[in-house]
Length: 294
Image (cartoon, rainbow, N blue to C red; front, side, top):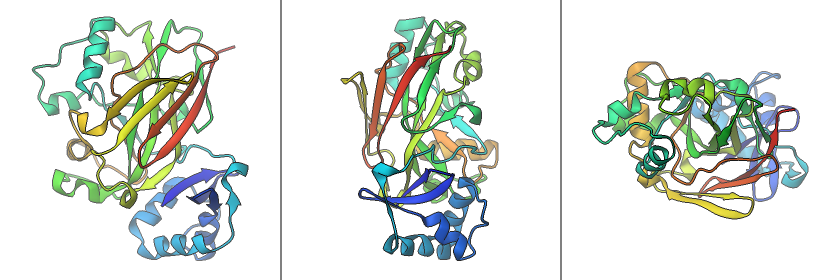
């Protein structure tokens, strides 16, 4: 099921070119309060089989044309956004070439995952949104990533059970200011990647039954109509299972938490007027605009 967030903060399910208002059905059945959040939708659907049955039953009811709704970020205020750093060898190499970044060749997987950083929810925009290049920025680029959405509370979870705690997956654009403050300064990530509009999510969340193996899908990006990135999630150094194991040994993961898994190689500097399109096989595609801060 593709769970979307649309119009006036409503939860829907996308099937074909139609949107079904599952939020209204869940409220009517008593599974959600009237002024619900998408975090609550995720938690109910992930943990209450009756709520998921209700949502699937709603697919038999009334619907709206997808083209006539305004899609929002599928979750706008997640408890946490955990972002993996340098999780593809080819991206590590392009960053070293561009800015003299560290050589992580001797790192263990846990050494690499210790570079996880947090992104603020205030940086979130949705599909069709606009990335605003800050006045201070000299160089901003894009990162297109597979993002896991946690559905169940997780603490000290092993890799073999890790996907049991995933609700689904979405696309995350981790927009990144490289200059100033980026050259050989990895401890500035929270600032350089935390500007307003620097986390784009969408177009919806695909439940994990539709993408059963997160390490077996393809990522493609176009910049102004030119293909600039093609990669496969099997190329990750640390996969989703390892991320959940590592993070859940550090802290309690909660429903609605996001784990975005790092970008492949193929990043490039953005300029006002640019158009981005990203696609992850099994999820869908989303577009973004780029403008300068006024």
